Amino acid sequence: MTQPVEPPAGPPPAEPAVDPVSPGPSAPVAAQPPGRSATPVRVLGIVVIVAGAIFVLAGVITWFTVKSQLSDEKITVSADADRFGGNAVDGPLTAYAEADAIEGHALEASGGKTYAELAKDDPTRDTVMTASFLRASLFTSVVAFGVALMAAGLGVVLILIGVAVVLLAGRLAALRSPPAAVSA
Image 1 (cartoon, rainbow, N blue to C red):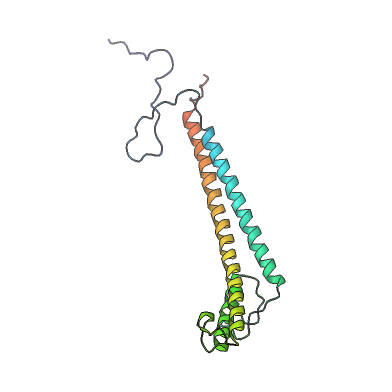
Image 2 (image 1 turned 90 degrees about the horizontal axis):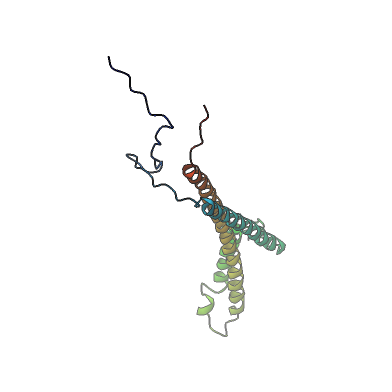
């Protein structure tokens, strides 16, 4: 009769670490040298989250500052504008609509000529020049709204990236930590 073979005494052999990100067959992952951790990755994630929050805050503050400044001017979109006629100019769409209406009025007053096309002694030159300045100011506010929206959107993206990096740092730390001893 043969004797059953008993497993050797002591803990079972350790299974090789597996890379959970790689597709296909699992390959052993090199052991992490002692003293290194995922802390720098976590700190990077937190820095990105904070930067994102600052971008969102800057975008929101810029948006409402420009909106407030436009509202304080008490500008109303011309009644003959293609869109938003009679509405207060307090946002990017109404500012654009009023700039467009001003252009139409200036071209009508000048017989279809721009400021550069008018003779220096033409009496409508000052009117067209003022219209050009008003349009430029309104377009500047449209651009400011766009930059504010872009900053806030970029901030949201940075926050999402930062959260992903922090979560990745947690996963890396879990992969690098030795397995907990099982008590019998």
